Length: 219
Image 1 (tube, rainbow, N blue to C red):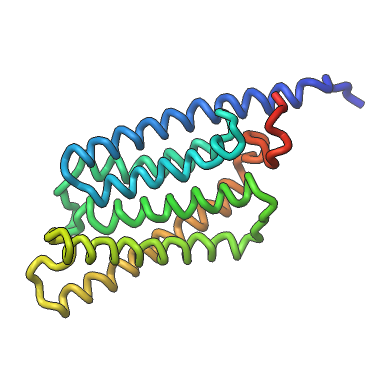
Image 2: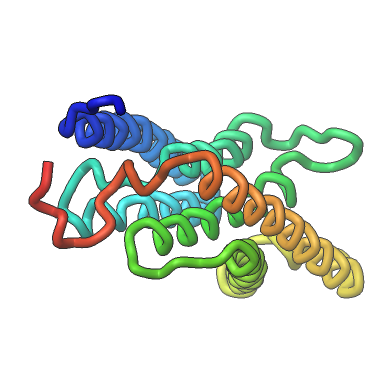
């Protein structure tokens, strides 16, 4: 029977936690920079959404008062991809699909839902079974898409923007909104399946962060 060092497991957990936190803070910084660039370019809604992602990422370290209590860096990387895409490939299209339209927007919304699901699963006593985890991310993504649509409409009405009310016939606007919800549903399903496959079956996320506030004083 092999003899193991009783401290080796704790040391590995600590190293994983520190590495995860370092990478996670890098992607938080990326999101902050993207949000700042959106403010500079006058994209108020996208800036607000990006900074909301930052706020979600900062909830665990603020709640636990520990810099290493971060969500898995992979989920922040996923959230950063559409944010960077929105900034770097604005206006470009592939096959008639605008890369900065439904594609990046609802992948980012799904990433926000995924961050929330991971935080509930890792940092609270809440545990989701496989099917409910996917369903939760899908519903949260579609709900966030609804809020995003309302925000654009209110901005058009009160701030004079043209996110939705851009002169198109009402039927075309409603059709576009329905396609937005379809895109949000697809993005939510993909994010939910990713949550189930990667974060439950591959990534050992529980070893990267404290699970209860009582652990705040541990190394």
